[in-house]
Length: 497
Ligand code: ATP
Ligand code: ZN
Ligand code: MG
Image (cartoon, rainbow, N blue to C red; front, side, top):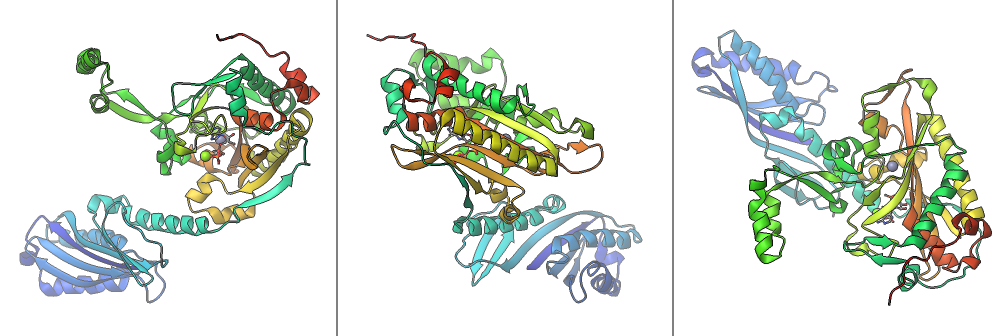
């Protein structure tokens, strides 16, 4: 890695008149030998290769390697020069960054077109060259370091995409008897058990399917949540930016988020034009509205992040562990674009989110207990054909930590069921061990100082229904007896002429 930085120190007086050229030369020499080498291996570090005094400005040309990055060198120099100039009653008012060029080795074929705070990007023979557009403030905020880190993440993500083995079979159930070979959504529509709602990927679930969803929840409660000691909570369903910054979703959620906006003011006068426009046209004036609202976050995406605010900044006594809670209080929303399909892939869906918190070994061990309970439910109640696969969780792939998942301590297990009508496997839930990600992100500590870990598991009710009905059909007499009795009689409320 190479850094070339051209910057001016702006001083409060005419340096050229107060200080002699040989004094400056002496200072530069001293900096090059000591200050800019401190902390680097022998022969490495930064160096001033040019220093020019003109009136109130001192122009510096700095080159460096990865050990003392040139912007760090410049910040060191600013202090050193301030000390020196202070003796001549001259202060440093600020810095101007003229040019900042960073070059490093780069993957052939991986093209980066745009980066924040970068004016121009050049790719040449296994190298990438960045021409930064930064000021003093962005150097102090360590923007160049973050850009370098971002590039490393992009490289890791690209390598990861190229690999196929981030899906690994862990368990597969026996073959099961299927009683249906059609798309269950179509059959549900035909029977008026569901109807597509007014929104994208949004459905209205009639009394029958709602009763089936509630039976899923009850089976889950009686056979997993209760025996494992879970308590219910109600998590918020609007998620402000502050939560997604801490949960890490702020790094990549944008293409899938359902955004939430608030009015810039609730003054009716501010909105009068919008109301009037609608009254005379019967059209919603989207552009007028856009000018009057503020994006404040999004709708529930992953369900557990907004819960963590409950623990934010707290110290937890060790003896209260493990903590086991769940939420089923509302919808989740994702913009699935063209991927929408029946009740299998929705923009609005219902999920039970299970969260457990404890010390590392316990969190890993508890995931095993959950897996055993799930296995029993799928065998005894649903009798479906399903499998478990080890996959790398979203945040590790996104943050370039895919390699860490190879340890198999932190990671996600996807549960998939075969859909006889298409021959495809559908993910219907997951079990994730998230390591210390959430406690770290939300500054939650353990009294003993030991690491706090957590895990979560999301049970998609529509996905359970899609998997179960696709294999067993809608005729109750074909369902496993235990599930049939968990559901009870299906209500008939509506008839249409
Ligand atoms: P997929 O790969 O199918 O998009 P995902 O990996 O995005 O799923 P997760 O983020 O792991 O899903 O979400 C946990 C659970 O939430 C899923 O196992 C599924 O039950 C449910 N879920 C996620 N997205 C949807 C959706 N668009 N429609 C219905 N259920 C969903
Ligand atoms: Zn979660
Ligand atoms: Mg998805």
